[in-house]
Image (cartoon, rainbow, N blue to C red):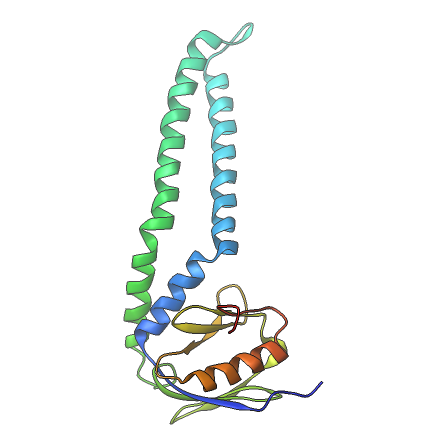
Length: 197
């Protein structure tokens, strides 16, 4: 099978690109499911610990005093689960804007020029070469776990929370098509937008 022709993109990375990537990763289904499982484990532990504590507090000669224990347990459970639900909602809806703001601030403070500014990206048979005015490097294709496309970016994911951001703004369709062909040829898990992408 013939390899697609090499492709080149020149992109200008901004702090907003990094902020959008951080929020995108935060909202990815695998991380959201991990957070949900963590909340669920905490709820189960809380249910069991509260039950054991109240049983111990009301223990008498015949075992727990169910008449005293169950109403208190129901109230404690309602309050605890309510607080847990509020915290879980905060994780999903209030934290993404904070993630965006903190990432933007952190990246804006970088003074070495490796993250922000002009990057020349060359997509070839060996991998993706990234060159800036002060540094260069290569990302081998076999190090890439997944490629995902959004309306504004291509994200080359190296792990659960690490990746390379490729802004699509300012790129013509022929360049984007050539880059997508490289992604398809070298990365098994490639999720590109649109049927004709």
